[in-house]
Amino acid sequence: MNVAMRSACPAAPARCGRRSVVVKAVAAPERAGTVNVSRNENFGKLRAGYLFPEIARRRKAHQEKNPDAKIISLGIGDTTEPLPAYIADAMAKAAAGLASREGYSGYGAEQGQGALREAVAKTFYGHAGRSADEIFISDGSKCDIARIQLMFGSKPTVAVQDPSYPVYVDTSVMMGMTGDHNGTGFDGIEYMVCNPENNFFPDLSKAKRTDVIFFCSPNNPTGAAATRAQLTELVNFARRNGSILVYDAAYALYISNPDCPKTIYEIPGADEVAIETCSFSKYAGFTGVRLGWTVVPKALKYADGSPVHADWNRVMTTCFNGASNIVQAGGLACLQPQGLKDMYDMIAFYKENASILKATFTEMGFKVYGGDDAPYIWVGFPGKPSWDVFAEILERCNIVTTPGSGFGPAGEGFVRASAFGSRENILEAVRRFKEAYGKGAAN
Ligand code: MLT
Image 1 (cartoon, protein in one colour):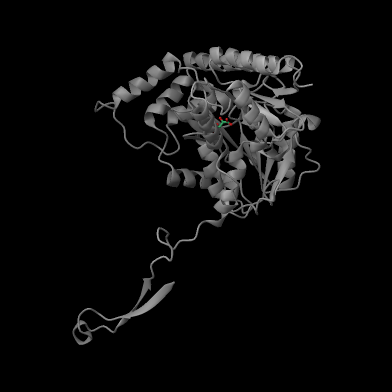
Image 2: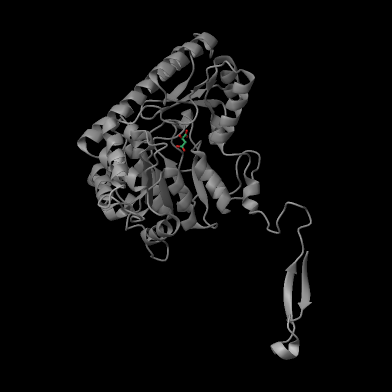
């Protein structure tokens, strides 16, 4: 309880010439070890810990129970293969340069080094009309998605693909854009169901208008890549409704299907509605190195006509000090001819893992999706709760997967297998799956 106390000037009033003053004293918190600050109530709405640390916790518990088990992770999409020497050398050189007067640099531009912004614009968006000053270099797509929410505040309404990368929903909850969890999903979020029946593209004729739409293609977790016709429908939907589309393209280079665009800006009119996030994580093995970018076109304007670009610049200059200068040297190397070749080789390697896994599950009689244009395989276990399947696979095979329901209500009955792993581990995982589930196990 706050207590108002009358406090006298320490010197006699006549001498200090001041009247007694009212000082607010704060009573000690009623419970030891607590402060007198209320919790952000939105955090109380979150159901559990973030998905991947929760999986890591269960993996640890399993390892403790089975100390000799050689656990293989097909869970979090974490790259496993060493960095290409050309890219690592560029970072080593930049790091060594910092020890010399000529090579030293301190703070850089919060938006990223000019040469890297130019290279990203030219390499990925040359055909789609984006310029270097629309590219903002960052420490990754996930962090940018959280920072993007700062621009929107707590009022906007939000739609997500269901299932989808949990960061979209969780940060919306943290921002206060949603109501409570109703046992299935969060009140106030428009869950756009993506399942085998609609070919993993939402029925937009039934979707409610929202201010913000998060959309990921190729989709994490289903592995489905949207076609040009589908993305045209999505952009037109956003334009008709005056919505902002936050388009997560973190896996775009995994697309093989020529009918699936690698950036939303290939779609006419997207520059007036879409922000695109992307990352070097899954292209160059930078999950630990950390480097990504966000594209905010200058043509994208709020209802009052003010440019979103200016607000994003304000967010980045305020909340971010620029990506590491060493890491940006690595990013620039990725976009040179040798680095590009190395990145495409790495992507091809993980895609081959994806084909091996997909073929295995198909052969065993499961319904399997994704894996052709993405590093994720989406396997159906109809009628079974995803967390039970996760636990069963961990118990029987010592393999970590990701339960589909962790990505949203429509993910129930599926598990996701990630193709990020050494070839040795992928082949060993295949052997264990076959041993445990055998041919026709899904029937
Ligand atoms: C995933 O497994 O969904 C991703 O790797 C997680 C991430 O990129 O943050």
